[in-house]
Image 1 (cartoon, rainbow, N blue to C red):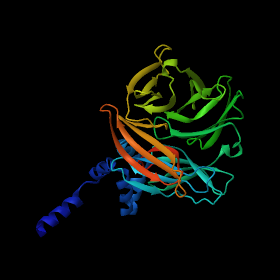
Image 2: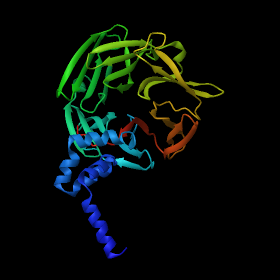
Image 3: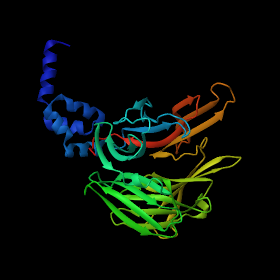
Image 4: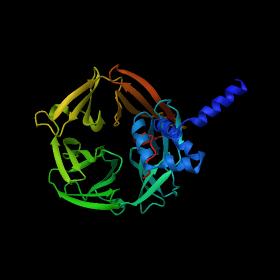
Amino acid sequence: MSINNTHQTSSTKKDLPEDVLMEILVKTEPKTVARCRCLSKRWYRQLSSYQFVKRNFFATKGRHFSILLTFGFPPWEIGRDWLTSIHGESQATAPIRLPFNTSEFGWWSVIGCDNGLVCLRYSLHGLPSEIMLWNPLTRRTRILKDPGSVRSLHAVCIYNFGYTSGIDQYYVVHAYKRSFRDRRLEFTFYDSRMNDWIEHVIEDKVIQKLGPNSVWLNGVVFWINWVGEDYIHPLCVVCYELKSGQLNRYTIPKIAKKKFQYLSAFNDKVCYISYDSTCQDDKIGIWKLDTNASRKKMWQNILSINPISIGFNPNIFIGDQIIMLMEHRSNLMRINDRHNTEICLKSLNIKKNQSKELFYRTWMEEIEIKSLSLLLQGMLNP
């Protein structure tokens, strides 16, 4: 390139209007935008403003994401859990360093992820515990008190986290019961707009055990109500709306109940996912729950597929893809390395019925999967 062309190119870059640059950055990957903030204090202020962050999030939502896997050892073995990130496009894996250090008696767990934020429950020294909202991209954190710190012995003690339909308000939800037979179901949730915890008590004789698997959708939390002698039979889907404090129950049809079931969000709808395994093949049934429809049309079987294999873990739905997590453990009956654990993460295309391996790892010891989460890239501050 000649000297004249070089000067011409540099002058063109200087003459590029700032509003055009901002429009380009609005559609740029949040990770790249976060790096651009280091150019100057002025750029830092502009690219960190709430209006820009909001526009950038909606312009890039769903295009850049990672899958978070929490690994750990069984309770009877000494060891610490660790968090691994799998990039959604390149499938590159990288360890994630948490924003705190725990002692040998400390612990942590992932409550959930939404709009680029990770909600963690942790304890540095064993007790008491706290809740942290953390953006791994901007490294901003916010610490909240944990209402479950004094209710650790309750039969039901579960959490959830998510935003409302926009990005202006999020909730951290804690639901608990003293025993499965207790009619008293208590909710404590944190409202980011009010910056306070709110308590709500509901008396319900039908709800017994709310499972740890839940779905958050636009300010509404959904659980499966498990009943029976061993609390292994799904009876209904429990729906709790935070703004109104209203609790509803929707009976699961018998035809939808199979050997293994859980809830998941699919195409912005709450779906009841059921697995059925036979000698001939394995099937996944997806039942959409429409809470606004009549009783006859409330449940609709929208999809049935025959996957290559079934893993007994709740999966993640991303468009036409199902992120399937599979675990296999075996005792090798050897003097050394007697335990073997295989973890495999696959992406199954629903339309093409084709699978692709995203992650595979083997340990010569007993390893557990503690959580599987989908993290969208975003620059929102907690």
